[in-house]
Amino acid sequence: MDNFFLIAFTFTLGYILQKFKIFSEDMPLTLNRFVIYISLPALILLEIPKLTFSMEMFIPPFVAWVVMIASALLVLAFSRLMHFPKKVEGALMLVAVLTNSSFVGIPMITAYLGGDSLAYLMMYDQLGTAIALGTYGTFVVVYYSHSGKIVPSQMLKKVLIFPPFMALALAFLFLGNSYPSTVEYTLHALSSTVIPLALVAAGLQLKLFLPKEEIKPFSVAIFIKLILAPAVAILACGIFEWNNMAAQVSIMEAGMAPMITAGAVASMAGLAPRLASAIVGYGIIFSFGSSAFLYYFIN
Image (tube, rainbow, N blue to C red; front, side):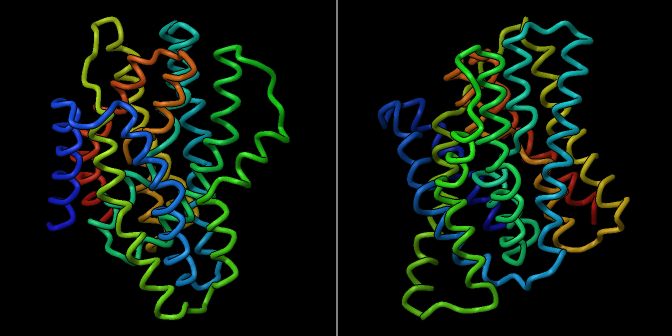
């Protein structure tokens, strides 16, 4: 209950601060940068070494990629069926496919599954959605906005120098080992800022305006992201008979809200920015209810 109160409070606080214009408009960017460059790497370095090396630790990234591929195909199918404009399709290819596996996923899922889920959360996030954002996300922006040529080496470089990914690579070197008490205390202090900063930033960016002409693509995105995506994850885990913490984390992550960063990328690329912001904003709100249903369903 304490975790849920913290999630609701910090998210609402961010929205109130936005409405009263307490901070400058670039404050969400500043908070997100702190989380990406400091808080999240600290959390990864703290939690990943606690894993025991096994095939189980690779279940989350496997499920993440299966879900994202299936979601992208579903977006294309719905888009062609309903004749969405190209830029709308491009926006959906980002916000209906990429999940909020860290900023919302970490506080939400740990509230349900506890601290033991954190290491698996990091695997889903860093080997799944984080890499997808740098590779698949770049491809979508280039293709749908005609902003330039795709250069694979540049996409690879972006992934390799992404701070959380660098932290993940370093953390693997410490599998099965513990840090000196001073280092562990410092990592714990820094990692504890992930939830409040990420959710305040999410509240600061929340946009609830939704014009009538965008209801159809909005509904498609929410349906795919919060209903079909976790259904694909449940199916994948069922086929391989995975019934453990890694599988539960994977299913819950698949059903999280759309990625905030994906919405920002869509907006910056001119891919239906108003629609993308609305999908992210409402998606976060709806995910409070859908995640509760999903948790009770898989249990």
